[in-house]
Amino acid sequence: MKHALNVEEYILQFPSETQNILHELRQLIKSAAPEAVESISYGMPAYKTFKKPLVYFAGYEKHIGLYATPSGHSEFAEELSKYKQGKGSVQFPLDQPIPFDLIRRIVEFRVKENLEKHGR
Image (cartoon, rainbow, N blue to C red; front, side, top):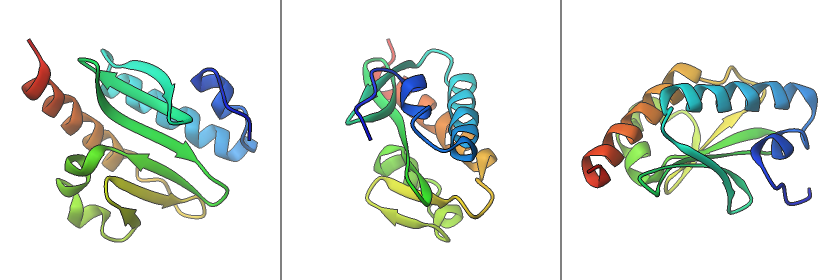
């Protein structure tokens, strides 16, 4: 997979079914965090508020990865417990429904957290 220059280019590298999920995820993040600045960081779509990381996401062959910093994951640990996780990351398998409502709540939590920590 080539290094994408922007989020749209990143998404277009995936099969159409995965593209649809990634587009929906992108729109969810943009609506839950309208102030967030979108970019590519660490080779994946990245969103920041107050110049601080908010969330990242990435597409893979069999899952979508969400990276909402350790606090974003620990806050929702019980709901995320059924998914494969790492420190600050979670994998949503493509062969199961993507929990968009849960993801929205995680993004909203991270927006509030960044506002409280870094807002002026």
